[in-house]
Length: 183
Ligand SMILES: Cc1cc2nc3c(=O)[nH]c(=O)nc-3n(C[C@H](O)[C@H](O)[C@H](O)COP(=O)(O)O)c2cc1C
Image (cartoon, rainbow, N blue to C red; front, side, top):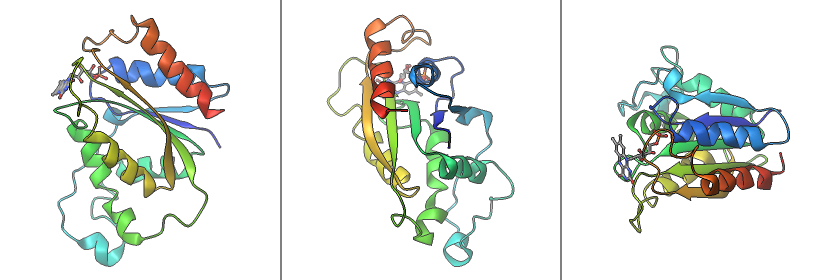
């Protein structure tokens, strides 16, 4: 029963990685740390096979299902991601789309709902809708795994890969989010 902390950024040692690592360090206990970019995930082609068999045709060929199993096993999850053109990076969206096989199974919402925490990082300082595209996507993706978003930190104006580490206020916001989880 160890929390899962997952960075969804393709950029090594960037702000999402820093946020995820800082969140993990700010928890009272251990966590499992994963980076999506270390995994191979094929995008959904909408072939419809999972609607009939309940199983994705790519399930044995890549890591999407293994990552879903990590979600299944976690009592709490934290996702950190950058904003790319007002949404998630392509690999993150590809992984999320693969959850369609889980969605079609209908086997969610019946067990214990677990908490999820989100940190999003954007380079821009302005933009009313900067995070508006990502949030519903994450909410409904996580719902399929019986997670409910309990806390969110939206960070703006962090563009260079080390910008978060140089920003005390942002680091404290991430640490406070971790503490708020109670883990
Ligand atoms: C392809 C691409 C698209 C981006 N689109 C946006 C955007 O729409 N809005 C924004 O504020 N920042 C945008 N950015 C900037 C990133 O959100 C910013 O650099 C962020 O810190 C990257 O996080 P990371 O270090 O975790 O990868 C974009 C960056 C890239 C590479």
